[in-house]
Figure 1 (cartoon, helix red, strand yellow):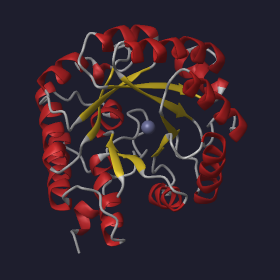
Figure 2: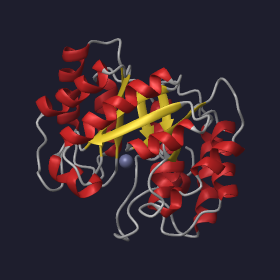
Figure 3: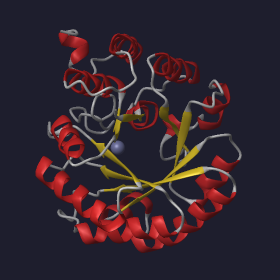
Figure 4: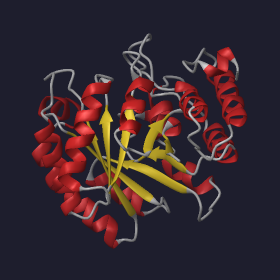
Length: 294
Ligand code: ZN
């Protein structure tokens, strides 16, 4: 059994240049729930001037069905985002920093050390406020500006988050640089450092075509939680040919073929992917939606 964290409504949509109305976002999440998805990164509490697509985070959350078997997550990158998140009934804060100074300076205008300092406070206060908190470490498998990010560095940042109370960590391959051998080795180092009790999630982008290969490497190394995006939505609005997250229905198809349950209905996922493609008005990256279920 694997646990899917669907990130299409956040990581996917935030990269769409076309404005997506709140009603479509809510309908997308409802369709995903109907297909069996129970863990959804629904919104991001990021500055709307920087990411206009996420401006309606509060509105989206207020329109979602409240069910105790469904977990809604919201991305938090700073204290101001945290303050917004606390005003909502989002279940989990996905507190994010990258692990490379060059990337973090460009992305969040501060070093990793400065970011972690602020965010560990956010983690503690989030837990005190009754929220679940997951730490997300970006560029964990490489940085487009610095190249290799040492595993030691990734583990150090993870440790800071864990010491603040995070019981879940997701390692994110922000720009699709990971390869299966590296995934195996990073997961092994992580498990050696923190044991098996901590929930470890993996987040891959299919930028260089290695998304599913990396998922499989993670699964073989003992990981049970994977982020993915319906229809492979994502990419970058400034790079028309960029591709997005690992595609949810393609990943589910792989696991079902391997007799690994996902608790989702593949037909409904494909239907949702096609519905989304119609609404986005462009061809999306998912492959199963084109090839059909065998
Ligand atoms: Zn991502």
